[in-house]
Length: 227
Ligand SMILES: [Zn+2]
Image 1 (cartoon, helix red, strand yellow):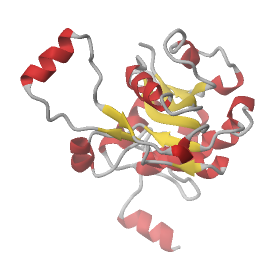
Image 2 (cartoon, rainbow, N blue to C red):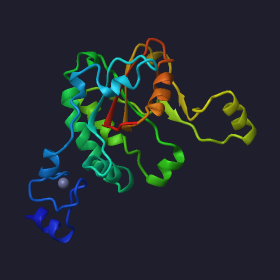
Image 3 (cartoon, rainbow, N blue to C red):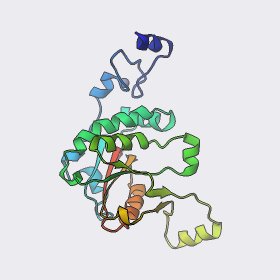
């Protein structure tokens, strides 16, 4: 009754198609749920997401929950998640994915879910990291830690000369840093992000995590985009 009244005063719309949510519909409408382009990547170890990292990074498991198509539902959902504070989208995606991920043999020894950190300036502007709720829901569902303290995003405060030197040396990604101690050895880190396109960001983050002694790394994203 109260919910219906609130709905009348402040109509809640579906972040996938913008239609009004009906009673009993939570976060995403039934139509959008039924047309969600699930990848089923988690049941195929040689899936498209995994292939993006062949020859680049040794990973235990790599998968994405849904396909990202231009003008599609997923693009709309991700846009709402990133730019319109619709963090419940990330939470729902994580809650959908966690039970499937829990059945993957390669993920049975995961210890920590690690979100790709947002640049501090972006974090201040946006007010939240769009991957946080997705990552937390997966960590809850898999009963492992959610860890935001190992992987850091460093601000650019470099001089032009330093930048030029790095460009000449072919170093393009100096935006991340890893901070760990002895207790972080031999862990299996599940790195999470919103959309995978080229995989360059995830590759940079994964390489840093693999510097930790005995570390294993897996990658999971909400969406897969063809690059
Ligand atoms: Zn919808």
